[in-house]
Length: 161
Ligand code: SF4
Image (cartoon, rainbow, N blue to C red; front, side, top):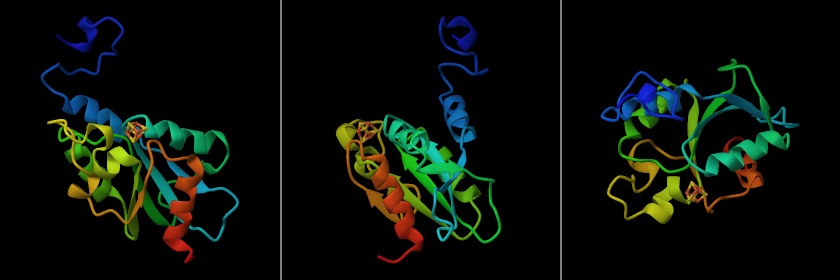
């Protein structure tokens, strides 16, 4: 059954047999942000929101902790934030998002699901930590972590404690 045949589901031109279509949509929805009020923190944050931890990422934006930024500005480090549940089906898209980032770059695993599989650690389809797919620089614990914890992790990447 295609999306066009499924009431309430947008037609992405794929089928129930091609979950990669959804993964491509996830990777294509990346946005970039900078830390508000910290011109010393020259990073651009690329969000890869996969599940409910992405709501906390959105809360950081809604509260003005992160602000929209132009992609890949010179002199800025790129940070991929993986927020939510990584599945084995999505892992190739996560890797592709990481490999597409320019150097220098870092990865933040935001929340228990991304860190280790979280509450779904024993699911056959859930990756037991995004560090099995990409090199992770910083882990943020919590289910979910608070938006401030995301900002602290981002700042810690470039400003020594
Ligand atoms: S860690 Fe908790 S809040 Fe975050 S994606 Fe997993 S279940 Fe959702």
